[in-house]
Amino acid sequence: MGRLYQENIIEEVTKFASSEIRPYATEFDANEAISQDLIDKLALKGYLASTFPKKYGGLELDPVHYGLFTEEIGKACCSTRSLITVHTSLVGESILRWGTEEQKNKWIPLMGRGKVISAFGLTEPDIGTDARNIQTTYIKSGKKYIINGKKKWITFGDRADLFLIVARNDKEISTFLVERNSGVKTNRITGLLASRAAYIAEIELENVEIPEENLLGKEGSGFTYVVNTALDHGRYSIAWAGVAIAQAALEEMISYSRTRKQFGQKLHNFQFIQGMIGNAVTKIHAARALCLKAGEMRMIKHQDAIMETTIAKYFTSKIAMDITIDAVQVHGGNGCCNKYNVERLFREAKILEIIEGTSQIQQEIISSYGLRKYY
Image (cartoon, rainbow, N blue to C red; front, side):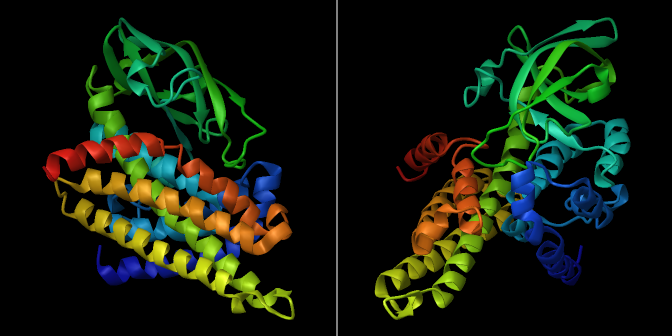
């Protein structure tokens, strides 16, 4: 797609997020659900198919503009951005990369129109980072697969119609497209620190039977190919989510410091407040530059694009936490109250250091890369 076309999409989504998402973010958080009305509007605008090819009804945004798109949605509401990350990046991109023509023709248009909402089923009650040791199992029985197990912390799990489920058969790991009506049970998880409106759930699969044509990719290639592809796309989206939260926190910090008075003058006149703002601006500019570089490398399929994405995800999740802490500090006692957006942003920032690979795991990956590259 042409640059002007894509820039127009970003301009449009900026206005949409400002009018249709941001004013309701606190309400979504309190109600622990984004509204069906918003999901319908996202679908109507084509935002659930932001990266999908035009032939499937998508907007066909390139990686750089998808990142900018993600930032605008994420600034407005983290849970809404989570829908885009999981539905579009994790599941949609995996089907587009590894699915058969029949699978792509069946599911991608439905996902783009919001007729089907999808979720990614990897983590389990006892398995998170150690994803290669999942306990969910499958067996082949005639022309069907039978799946048994539990998944946990599944974003949009309690809302999804379609699940990309990762399961094992002895030592082999495979991935499957599992429809809710095949017997999947979901249990909503409440009382969460953040992502409260993202329908996070535990999933139960008890003798769930699916047809063999619902195998995604080749049997036994689930982790090496499908899961790694999904997580790479997810990390890129989360990298931009860090920029989004940090930028939103900076704007809240600046707005508050320009209106709040202490000791007879506006907060922004105090040097220590200026120091916080200056640090935040610098960190955000560095984080956005990393994300843009990763996006450009992804566009040309550079061999180091995955690593650059990992570095960006690690850095932006760290600076999002730093900046939201400072934003709460600038707000003082008000920063601890949910009537101010920084309270929610602070909670949401912490999640980014955990999902799509913890910061500690990212450090290990980046360290291994550095030890090889700079020896």
